[in-house]
Image 1 (cartoon, rainbow, N blue to C red):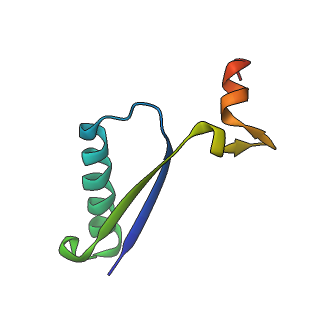
Image 2: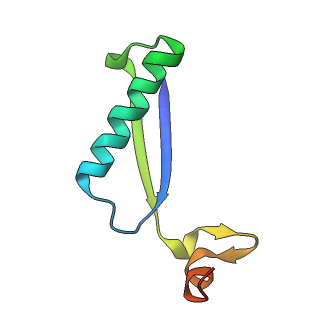
Image 3: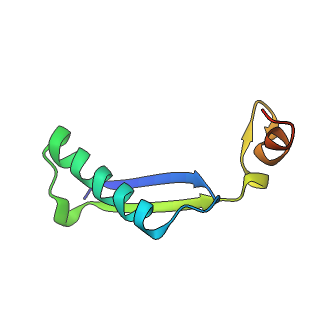
Length: 67
C-alpha cells in the first residue's frame, strides 16, 4: 500500500487544488510504479510558515523581507 505525504505551507490552498494534488500524486504512482490507485494513500499536511524554515530562518520572516 503506497503512502504519499505532501507537505505544503498553509497559505490558502483550495480544496480543489488539494483534490488535484491527490489525484495527480496517485496517478503518478500508477504511471511510474504500476501501483493500484485503490490502495494508494495520499496525505496533505499544511504547515504554518512560522513552523517551516529555510536556511535557518522561518519562512514567515523571509517573506516579510521579500525573500
